[in-house]
Amino acid sequence: MLGRTHYAAEIDEKLEGEIVSVAGWVHRRRDHGGVIFIDLRDRTGLVQIVAEPVQDENFHKLDHVRPEFVLAVKGIVKRRPEGMENPDLPSGAIEIEPQIVEILSEAKTPPFMPEDAESVDEILRLKYRYIDLRRRGLLQNFILRDRVLMAVRRFFHDHGFLDVETPSLARSTPEGARDFLVPSRLQPGTFYALPQSPQIFKQLLMVAGIDRYYQIAKVFRDEDLRADRQPEFTQIDVEMSFMTQAHILNMMEAMLRFVFQEALNVSLDPFLRITWEEAMEGYGSDKPDLRAGEKLWNLTDTVKAHVSWPVLRDAPFVGAVVLRNYQPSRKQLDTWGEMAKALGAGGLIWLVKSPEQTRSSAGKWLSTEEVRKLSEKVGLRPGDVLLVVAGDKYPSLNVLGQLRLEFARRENRLDEGWRFLWVTDFPLFEFSEEENRLVSAHHPFTMPHPEDMDLIETAPLSVRSQAYDVVLNGTELASGSLRIFQPQLQSRIFSALGLQPDEVQEKFGFLIDAFQYGAPPHGGIAFGLDRMVMLMAGAKSLREVIAFPKTARGVDPLMNSPSPVHPSQLEEVGIRIKK
Image (cartoon, rainbow, N blue to C red):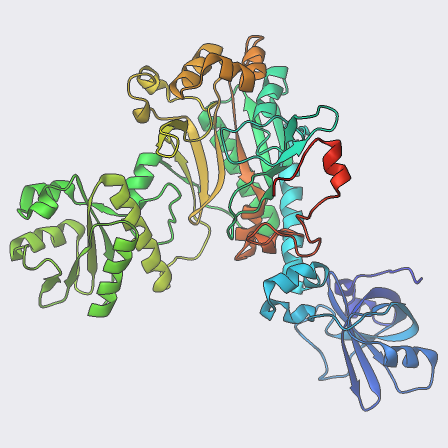
């Protein structure tokens, strides 16, 4: 076989007159009056091969080839005739006149051509993923992913972190999502679990004295899938000892700045930092999209002071979102009301301001003066609309936050750019209606806020945590926290969660034991690598940045997995399938 000397994108006018060897797939074949044009594709782009109608072996070979054949070509680089240049290609000013042509592999007509893949059913594309991956746009995502990973590794190496691998076969800890279980042949009746996170292992590494750890870790969660979730995905996992929360946030913000600069040549603005309470009150979400316009309005005090209508006056919370420069029809206003009810609101009140008047859906119950007070509070101007929701605080904020986002999307009001922020001080606990008990909002090793330690037993739902998230354009990019490292405090948290001492010992005894031997203060964070690359690439789904993803039903059409296994394999691990 001819040895390749250049990729397609490396061939330009500077190589005119030189002999080069290229290799790749036939992207397109054209025959113009006996002159054969071959666009040869490799991972960097296209280069044109041109064979004149002479009766030689190379011409006959190129006359035989069809799309997706694999060729190696050695030839001389020539400038294209004037007027025949292609300015869209790096090699668009030149072509190669072949001297030697090798057909390395013939190809059947594929079920779809790579350049047409976006219009093809996704299941078919995943079944023939190796053809789909030849698509230029998709290939670019993996080139970007590689640049991101290289930048991540350089940053952590330069800042004294050690890349340490943790086990892929671990113990099941059913405090989080459902585990993928792996039966043990050598220990019949017992199971490993594929890791949902290296959490416990990286905390043990801190106890061991590896005070700056990172890992590009594959993790597994048996959850329902969606566009930004897969059963197996990749984390940039980080843990540090002897660092305050501020130190960790500064370090990780610097890492993201470095990665975006290296991978996209983008300089990021300083990240906004707000608490969970501020995020909920301002945006109705713990992952706010800062691109979607102004914050929500709390009208509770204004209503209690100036409105007599009991539906508003007696509500525990009244909030609103302003839709600026918007002139909806009555049907559109009704649509917003239906949407609010579908999201859980009891109803929606709207105010529409024009130069002449302010109309309200609650005009029967609100006086002109009351409407004026509400309008003045939010600075309503002619051409603005006010949507008001009343009820319990956080459900109402959630509805308003989703209305805010939906308006920005429908009206193309989302600002351009990368809008990062940190959200801190999340609740430590939340109440699970399904389990009828307190559960950890983050995980049970999260350090409580120092000012709330006395509330753990008396008012647990009021306890804030030292947890933090990175949010980018309304998507959670990373989540982390300071960790509990004192055994006594960890026992208090387990007790608040309703875990009995013997249960704690069974599930987490090895961690509690380790803390008895000198545990440093530590904390960390985990970034969703796939999600980050998806956003950086402008992709719509994780499946566009994972080489061999699963469908929404957790199926791999290419390998036809999951699949049954031979009965003898089940026999070896002592498992019988229940019909």
